[in-house]
Image (cartoon, rainbow, N blue to C red):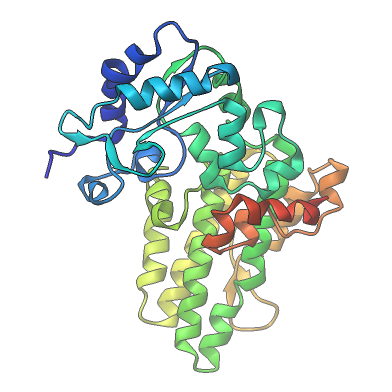
Length: 340
């Protein structure tokens, strides 16, 4: 097997050595964009076992698309630096790892709408974070000014929407935090462990939201969370909760994690300070944070009438957990009506 290099590095030299000379004086933007571990910078040697090769998205004006596609089809080698560039042929055209399109065309294909023409609240709410990462996370090798404004627009959620999403994420935790004890109490240890895992994932996603960092899809969620850095030990507490063999250990680790994420909330300074220490759930023998208090505090800072009218179902990643929905523009764009 060819020696591994990160795809972003391979694509950079591939662009400079092969693709840029084919384009001449045509104005364009080019980068490693769209789907893939390589776009996120998470690729390893294992990534090379399928669909691997130098790849680029090249964005040009509409009247240049066909010209550039032909130049690319005619001018690409079969290999570059020992990596495959072409991976087969169909009846009409060579298949390779270079996509040529207009910016609007590529955005519509990737996101389901042309974000260069503006991003509505509903667009934000139905667009999976993994797909936003496909626009903003990859390395850009050339840009005549057409791509940067879209990447800048997607840098992070608008402030009011972010606060509402924080409220929704706290609400998810509030809904299930007492169930870890209740399932244990009736002898359902498997159920208690499953709920613990769900809550750990919700805390991880909350930490990413607090850090204004988009969450990738499930394969890379733990990697993205780890890269936040956790000097307060949140990662250790969550790992302890997952590994716990007894309910007592499970609860102790969870409430430790709850207090840490609560203190991170207070450090943001976006709401009046909320007491971060755990407490008993009503009169039951369960220690919880009372996460609804944080949801209410966040929601109290949301003044956007369109958002305050919505129930706390959250954006798509907070309410949908199905790959076939999250990866299909036709599927998730139908959800626009939910937020209309």
